[in-house]
Amino acid sequence: MTSTTTRLFALALLLMSTTVAQAQDLAPELQFGARGVVSGNVNIASGQTTSAVSDFSDTALLVGARQKLFHDARGQLVIGFQFPDAESNLGQVFFHRVFVRLENQRNAFQIGRTRLSSTLVEFPTLRDDDALLFTDVVSPFSDGEDSEDSQFGNVIEAMRFLTPRLRLELHGEHYTETNAADDFSLNAAGLSLLYRVPESQRWNQKVLDQLGVSFDGFFTERAGFDGAWDEMLKNVKVAAVLNLYPDPVHFVQLSHQTIYNVGFDETRRVTSFGEMARARSVAMFTSLAYTWRKYEWPMLRASLGAGYKTFPDLTETNQLTLLGNVFYRLGANFDVGVQVQQTWNNGDLERLFEHRSTGFKLALIYSVDQRFNNQFDDRDSILNLEHGYVK
Image (cartoon, rainbow, N blue to C red; front, side, top):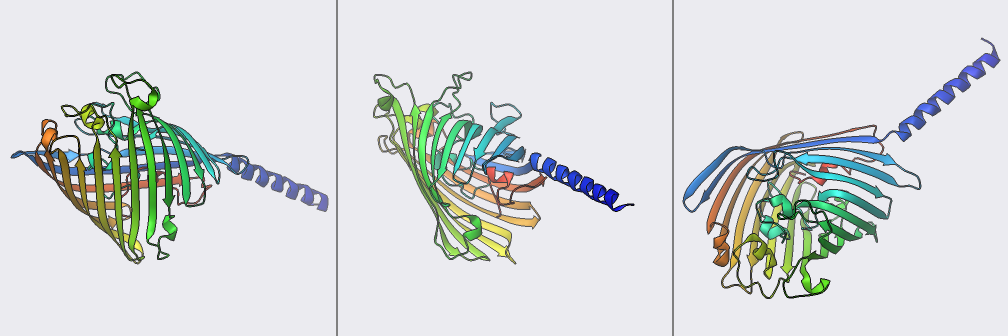
């Protein structure tokens, strides 16, 4: 082979390798995530015992794609569904994530269906709706049959990172309306200011992990009032997460959130879920969680939580819940857990719920997280969108 032919052959190989590399750069990163949550439940209310052989609600499947864009930006598409509660009116499958996200180092914008801003903190419960009435802003447009009405909806959100740990969020949302299923107009809006330490930096002996405050307004039709502000149902949330013992092996964390619902002065009694959402209230939830990391690998998490909700304008009307659980990692991404919860409802709330109820749950949780054509670091897993367990 002559020297000229050798040079041409080398040039051809170089062009081919460059073309392949460029094609890989243009191809998106593909994401696949699944989390199976299956539990055996025993519930005792008013002396009557009911049980479910298998409860697989909140089991979810997610697929997504992320793409490098020009000007140091990236885009993301996520489509996901989960199995709703057994008594839900949402059918067998509920699409809870369908959104497109565009972001760069300092800004993010997303539009579609995803988690509503009804809470600021992810508390260590088996399912994210186990303490819904204490941890989330309750939707005034729902009849209360579906917990997803206060958790998932159509969202348009803009985010600005003021610093790597401090971000400002502005969002408009559509909470599902029980009596207007075909209406997708904007019925809520809010503003949040959030501080959060990246998980990789929690071992730097810093006590403050998260701090947040937000305002949410619901555009309701309030009889006898005119003007958007007077008709708006207003909620304020304040939350903090403290690393009491930020040790890489024995980790102790305290989480708290308070939700103040300004309410409507004319709502002086509660006979429905909608009236409960419109009554003035203060809801608090606090949890203390311990995580054991054997050789810095998460193995066990145990937590105790307590929630209290009071309605100042209603006579002796309040709620109290106590919750405890333990999750143990049997192997990679496979956990077993047990949870016990006791709840009391007093005053007007006894028209909607049992005065006292006790729940026992034994659960198995399996998570799958796979990516193809990796383009980004592994800290932003698609499963971060879902409720977490031992981590």
